[in-house]
Figure 1 (cartoon, rainbow, N blue to C red):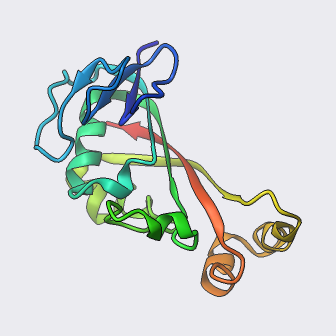
Figure 2 (tube, rainbow, N blue to C red; figure 1 turned 90 degrees about the vertical axis):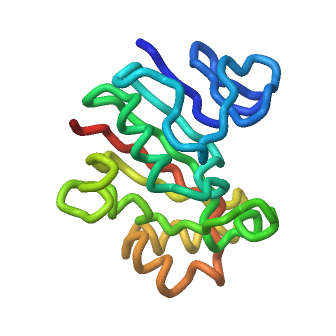
Length: 171
């Protein structure tokens, strides 16, 4: 199984092909994700992961178009990004975007970005909360009423840390 770690930084996942903007130790390929087509062959990977990268990308449309292109049909794509309600989403001056848990919606079949970049099927999304005792309440809200209700009415009162999303490439 061939796997890629997109924006791996100095902590490349084990048994992954690591790509990054900077030449950290262990990075296999250095290039700018915003520079157009990536220097990687079509349908090369069975899975992809990108942890805390999409919030830095200027052209997210091209980012997902290239992920779709370099992954095989059925490849699982894992994306992790800060939740818009968490201070870390706003405290890094290099963050260009702030995401909600439903950020992947436009990439699905029948949606406008899916038609442009390629289709991604949503597998699941989990929002991660702080480990404090206070986080039991937003967890309960999500469990009883769903992520959308939590984000609409409670997110800034009870911030979530990260969004974990799994997608599947469909060609």
